View 1 (spheres, rainbow, N blue to C red):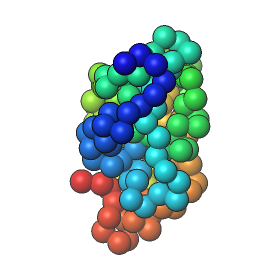
View 2: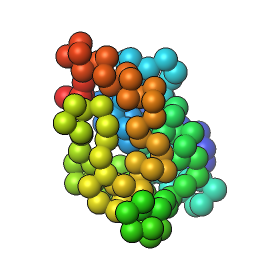
View 3: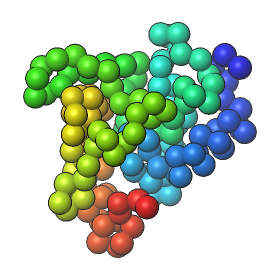
Length: 141
């Protein structure tokens, strides 16, 4: 399948693989106020296909900020680098939680560029992490 349609079966597979969490900011779909999207990591308008290996579960905030980006600027070096790719990169190799688990920290140029480009520490997400941490529900397991 190479068109834009994501079947219910493929949507379920992507959601299960992501354990119901945004594959960028780790927000949990069960606590979201908006439905999560199955997004194209390599955007369709840049040749990305609608296949399992090019799809990721994304909260609306990350999906909106990512849009069709595949690169971002590392705020430390100023270099343009590829953004985090949930299918080919390990999340914990590029990101870590701050000591209070409210902020995502970029560990690598790719991680830092992704934090900046997708605004992974948006005020609403940070506030939700704080509340969920107090309730014993964050970070996701």
